[in-house]
Length: 116
Image 1 (cartoon, rainbow, N blue to C red):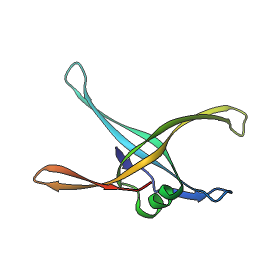
Image 2 (cartoon, helix red, strand yellow):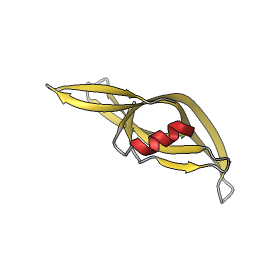
Image 3 (cartoon, one colour):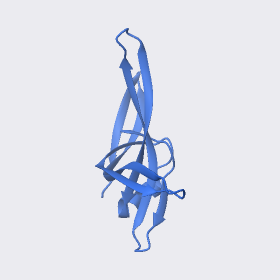
Image 4 (spheres, one colour):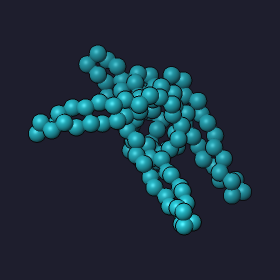
């Protein structure tokens, strides 16, 4: 669960399949042994295919909240200089759009189911 860090970029493959790519940001909070609070933000590359990619391109924008499920995919490639590079992406199979509403200092999360 996180918020979009970028707008979805939707393209069509040479075989006619839609693919959307975007990043989400997730926050982590913790206390160190001395009681000091810490916070960090992690960014994750997301890939979505076919009809779900089209829906994401139409309805999601930077800052939108999402809950997604999928699989982690690791890949490697050589860059222009011939150096080996590695990347990790989450290939999303299911995405729920989240809307956050403040209600008496309580944050309410409403799930909007997106069909695959």
